[in-house]
Length: 71
Image 1 (cartoon, helix red, strand yellow):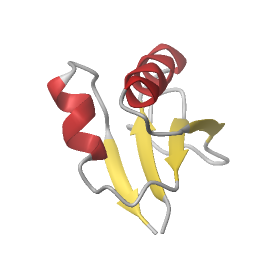
Image 2 (cartoon, helix red, strand yellow):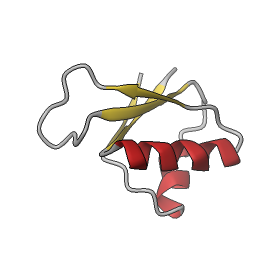
Image 3 (cartoon, rainbow, N blue to C red):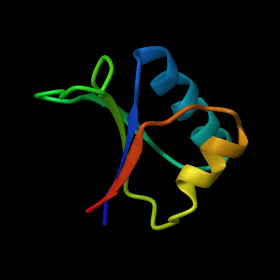
């Protein structure tokens, strides 16, 4: 299962990646191919981590995210 975390900007994606790495979670930044309205600059973080609390970790760290998709 992959977890995709939408970040509104490249800066938020970088911050989120740093927070996850501090918590021992590998995450990779990617551009959305076709960002829609409300997707900001169209950056997502992808992680293979099975921990569904990834979004909670980011929110508790003050990083703003736009959404989470579990695939």
